[in-house]
Image (cartoon, rainbow, N blue to C red; front, side, top):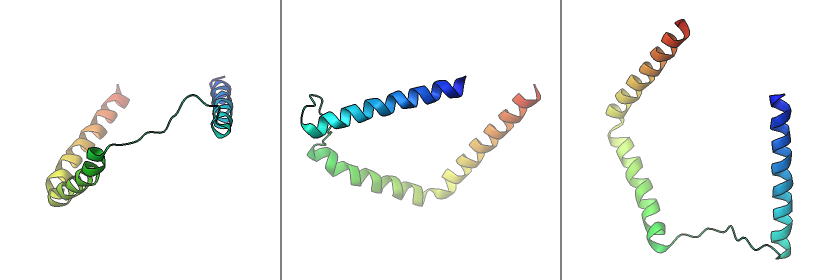
Amino acid sequence: MVQSLNMDFENQDKEKDNSSAAGSFNGNSTNNSIQTIDSTQALFLPIGASVSLLVMFFFFDSVQVVFTICTAEICLSGKSQEQA
């Protein structure tokens, strides 16, 4: 039953996408879904990406320890829930 409902929702989404796409190609669409960024966003996007990569590169050891601890905690909490 759940699978058939999911398929119905997917079919409805496809029909909506097809009808909205046809309207936008004909120029009859009143809803513009084009998003633009301003100059400050265009400037800070590559700077922010570069800084985040540098932080991950230089602090890989400490980030790796935190990631390992979080992964172990998730694993242990999952096992304790299975036993309950």
